[in-house]
Length: 186
Image (tube, rainbow, N blue to C red; front, side):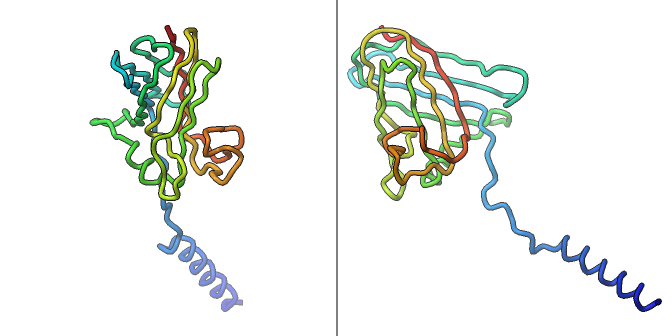
């Protein structure tokens, strides 16, 4: 009877030691905290640079994101756009954009317009030639009110369904960041 108890004790110690071993798989890519989405739009033919910014320091907390748009866009104009992602809960703020670019195969920005008064075209690609969307052009059409929703998808399905053309409908994957910006085209 004593030997059975000893065997059970030894087996329990082995199981406990195995569960605490250093052989547990490591998390390869820890998810970054993104508190701020900033889009800078520079008109190609001269004019005012427009900055769209969404800051949400409490994430899913009770406070709504702070949204700012520095001015109105001009109708029938092409802008060069650059999107930047920050973690502003640390000082100095951590720029997450470079990591998204390095992991371009696993990421894609999508730009959707509520009223179809503007459109975007990707200017950057991952190592497979598929879009990332950090850099893009935004072309405005006629004057009016518009809302731009910027979404960063992690592990999008870039193999079809117009995802590489910017259609988020069948992108799948998970949302890393999303921000909506109301603005006026005049």
